Length: 273
Image 1 (cartoon, rainbow, N blue to C red):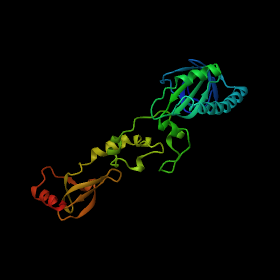
Image 2 (image 1 turned 60 degrees about the horizontal axis):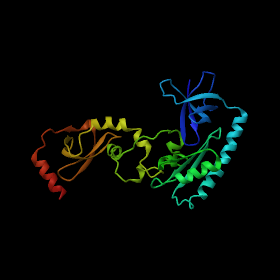
Image 3 (image 1 turned 120 degrees about the vertical axis):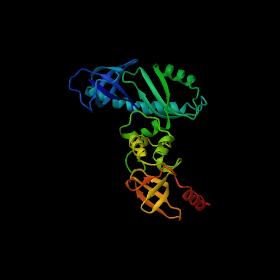
């Protein structure tokens, strides 16, 4: 069986384990490239996933107690690291720390505008703690994932609940959904475009195929007019007529005009001046 397990508070890993009744919510010990770590099972995966790590054992009560002790130690290690930043003239914001279960590696997560040269600090800490120290720069979305924030929808942010991998969210998705670029409603707590814009991409692509383009000439019960707006959800368009009037019309109630009469186009242009 394949398990998706947590790695610290910010990452997940896929572990191959024997079918011994492990369930979602269990803690397991698994083997990594640098030793052993403990993880919380968040999902049972289908066999098609690529396996990265191997199962070692089910976590015991003592293992869980050690895990809690390591969490407290992580806080102290992070404080110690922050205190050393001025000495090494580093502009970084440490947002997390993970001590590997067997104490063979300590991983720090940080935010920075540019990638700083932290090699001397890593060398100092590795020697002081006699273990491998790793620094990993994370982005604004990874940082937001660490906190139970709420989005404009009123719900907990997706990243803080179930998103483990971030997809590319571009302004093309805004245009596809007829949203204005730069609108706050499309921006998440991380300051980036919201991940949920991706969820309905296929829906909007299919809806767009049903609509004539904005600017197209159509025939309605009120006569011929030009489409000036559309609503992909309600499947309606706003039509402007030569006399300046407007109306909302359902897609089923319009007929595209293949060769627009010059007269109505001239009236439209005059009406826009």
